[in-house]
Amino acid sequence: MTAAPAAASAPGKPGLAVSPLATPFPEIAPVPGVQLAIGRAGLYKHERADVVLMRFSAGTTCAGVFTRHNVGAAPVDWCKAALRATRGRAQALLVNAGCANSFTGSAGAQAVVRVMEAVATDLGCRDREVLMASTGVIGVLLPYGKILNVLPSLTERLDGAAWAEAARAIMTTDTFPKGATADCEVDGRRVRIAGVCKGSGMIAPNMATMLAFLATDAALAPEALDVLLREAVEDSFNAVTVDGDRSTNDTALLFATGRCGGPAIANPRDPRLQGFREALNAVCLDLAQQLVRDGEGASKFVKVTVNQAASVASARKIARTICESPLVKTALAGEDANWGRIVMAVGRADEPILREKIAIRFGPLWAARGGQVAPDYDEAAMSAYVKGAELEIEVDVGAGDASAVMWTCDLTHGYISINGDYRS
Image (cartoon, rainbow, N blue to C red; front, top):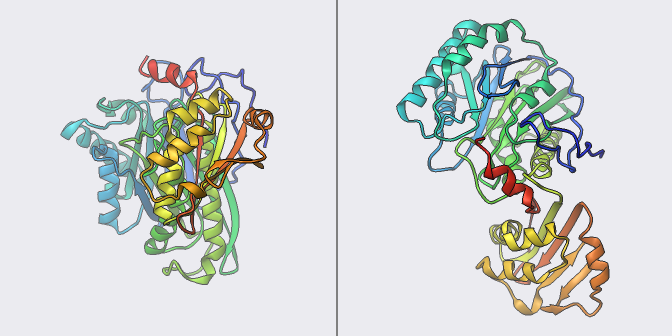
């Protein structure tokens, strides 16, 4: 995996250096039945694309997973209602960066309606067959007139090749565009899965501050699509955290155009979907890990595994507590092998543990075993290990046989700088 040059300027925000953990954008071949177009509505002060339109062929099915945030946002409300009304059908998606249109009351909801009606008119479909996602500052009403002005040019430029441009257009504090793709077979037919996402800060489970849009030419009924997406999200977007905060606008949408041919598969447990399930899980995990690699100010990519927990839920809570501890994250940023902070985080997770069985390992190096400092603990070797850009921390808590994995990053001065002047 090749890192992007750290000195480069990020397209999401002028002057923001590209993360040293950046991954190159993959070559995404067109997905049959999917067209994209990118434009500039002027939602940012500086020159950049900020709107994406995606069009899907007739008969496309769709599933979505959304934020559990109690405030929510107008586009999220629209998508939930639209998917219920159409029973999982969609013809288009419009995404904007630069304005979250969250906490904007009835005026925000009406702004979404205006945009959806206009897209539906231009594309010749029903407004409920058009979905919307937004990202940006909370509490700012969407200036829908700006989007309506650019919409005609978007519908004229639709094609299947603009995945990288779409990933770039939805960025906010992201420092690099994020995408993933995989091919697999369904019932003897070759199908493709492609996806893009955005997110850098305000990232935490259920879900993250992220937008993710995936498409496939597989033929899948809405009920199968819904189960497959939810399962994939659980171990990917719901298993990453940057700072413990989650957004009002989180949205993950999966569209299936059915252009590969054959009857739509409705049973998510159908053995013909095993390869598709594995490919979808891999694409979602790839995208989710890219979010962590682009964590605001991040210099470390960290995998945390918790073993011997009383339940999977308990393991996940302990892992999340470790991943979101400011003391753990700042120690990693300072390349300080202060594993005692891991012990602190495990204890304050308030989950069943056996102190005398706790073991902690950094990569191949034991820090603790049997509830105390490991007999072969090597401070110099541990200090050398934490200087790496990619770290693995494994913790056994001795309370059962359940495990969980979560990915996070460190907490540097860069995070404060980015968030201290986010609106400027």
